[in-house]
Length: 310
Image 1 (cartoon, rainbow, N blue to C red):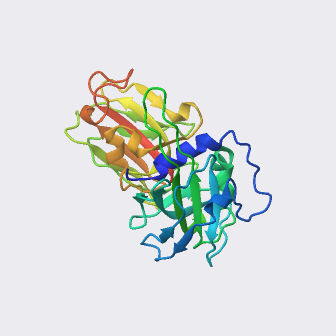
Image 2 (cartoon, rainbow, N blue to C red):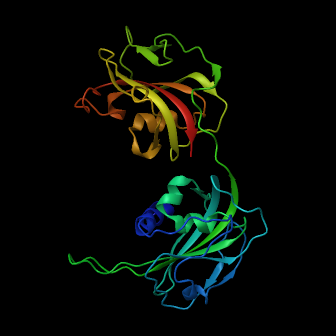
Image 3 (cartoon, helix red, strand yellow):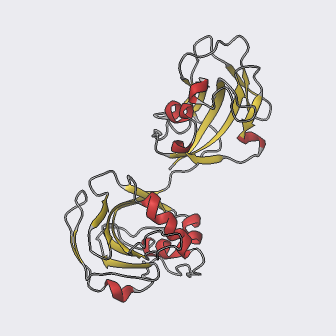
């Protein structure tokens, strides 16, 4: 379990999506749920890289998602549509044992956007208006044993520290940066009259390794292999050059985590910068293999415009 938000927060969104929690009328942090059950909670702040000391009456059992500001920081108030840097320590509500501690690691990032507001207003309303440096307590209901024999799970307590908050980086409409002349022997790329990149693979040899070549070098944030990115892209099969997929066809940018795509994308876009247009020549073993998916068979070629990163 490397990223606790990836496990607990999505489940909490499902629990609260139908709860009808009202949106915050004022930009001040709101507590919600069975907050009296958190009255015994006491914290000792140990800085930003070490989890606070936490004491609470056990067992802690809540029947609905519950959130409360335990102590208020001295920083600026967090605003809607910002990205909050947070660290989390999570406890088993029954016995107080530590489930996960992200404080020694890089901060988690929580984007306070409309998607979070509509999916889990209880979390959104707690963060928006809270001050940087604050500790929030979030109690997540447990689960009863299933009829199939699954074990019951106790409630969990998360103590969250807001380390920083900043405006989310804008998503570009098109690549922006310095043109790069690629070496000879690679597929060639030209834009048509609608601004859509067209790829020619005539005379291009099959790759022996992944090729990741900037066509435009953006000046934005560098992408990590664990990031979620927003892109436009075109993909063709090296054998024949037929387009098998293009976000330009729908007129909508695509957003997805780099951990959930073919290895050629994960490896080839790691370290590239927002604003870049990248040519990827992907060997079949880093794509979908010889069997492929539809027309995406064998060695593949992509042009990827990196327009944003989370």
